[in-house]
Amino acid sequence: MNMTIHDDPVAVTVPASLAGKRVAVLGGTGPQGRGLARRFALAGLEVVIGSRDGERAVAMAEELTAEIGGPVGGGENAAVAAGADIVLLVVPWDGHARLVKELAHVLAGKVVVDCVNPLSFGKHGCSPILVEEGSAVEQAQMLLPDSVVVGAFNTISAVLLNDPEQGRIDTDVLVVGDVREATDLVQDLAATIPGVRGIFAGRQFNAHQVEAFTANLISMNRRYKAHAGIRVTDI
Amino acid sequence: MNMTIHDDPVAVTVPASLAGKRVAVLGGTGPQGRGLARRFALAGLEVVIGSRDGERAVAMAEELTAEIGGPVGGGENAAVAAGADIVLLVVPWDGHARLVKELAHVLAGKVVVDCVNPLSFGKHGCSPILVEEGSAVEQAQMLLPDSVVVGAFNTISAVLLNDPEQGRIDTDVLVVGDVREATDLVQDLAATIPGVRGIFAGRQFNAHQVEAFTANLISMNRRYKAHAGIRVTDI
View (tube, rainbow over the protein chains, first blue to last red):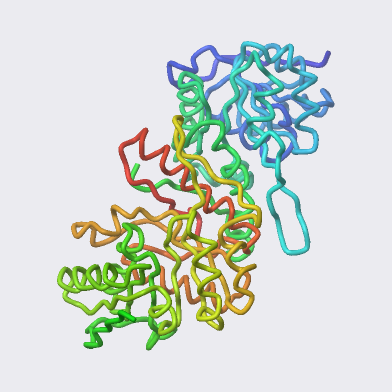
């Protein structure tokens, strides 16, 4: 089992709800996962990166630790999930169900944050995949009856998350879920990224269109040469 | 055929693309349609309100004309659609297909702007209705092979559109469609509302999640006591 945790304290204040909580980012070696892990570590949270390939996760964790001067751990998915309180799923859609099934036992009792966008890419652009269960979030919840699944971080740009020149990201993270305590916690997690607000955006049965909306953001990115995101107005 | 057009000139500059173009708002007696007609008339556009009940449309047109001091016309749906260049559909979802079928002949050759959100309301809140054709926009396009259908104005608050104290509405209108000339025109139409940008947000096959997203906005409105909208960031 490859697992490295650097446990030096970081001199940043984290919200009380997240104090002492370890955040695992499964799929943390991809751009979105790397960017989220990077931002959470910058905010002073204890972060571990997971991957099917534990050595890749350790290498990415060391790269991030070197970049940001704070401790990031890494290891195989199951190991880092087992040691975490909050587990983010940031894997490609086609590996989503398999990963969730494999880890159902270690994810029991935890808050699972599904960040996966079921999308396909065709010659006219990107479009949503219809998910039998309704959404990635609902699929995960069905496969994880003993976890609380929350959807979030679907619409935040990986490029901006990873850009050292972007101290702030002025966008919102839409948080969907059925358990208030868990959606509140994930809103707090989102808000650790400077410029970001975590906004409650409905129950699990309204997760699909948030996941699918990334197809629209990709269309906007192409048209406007941007890294589009969402800010909710009047809130 | 009940149809009244007040054609006094209004001293407001409209964009060149909309000069001389008449805008019909079918379903203009409902809050969303009323609010859009109101804003377009305030911007100096020639606006006609349509309804199944022509007398109700005329009454609403007279009410708006009195409120804003500019001319708004009204009449039965078919009559106002026939005389317009751009036709907005702002009817309830359960009347959408029927209305579109009935008007297919008069809508031929026009830009049809579908503003309809297929939503249902249950005890746990509002959720999207799965549309066989994919979305209201795609349903309309299938039924209107000789029109160009664009989706827009799905996420803008009817309350804010109708509020005389809201001179500006700081939100974006997401515009989806397959024909650039038509989406450009509808973006210009959106931008006649002070504070609003019309943002191209993808092709028709990505209309569903924009329509469905209104369910999330309704969830946010309940949680935050707001009239939530979307601003696209980094554009």
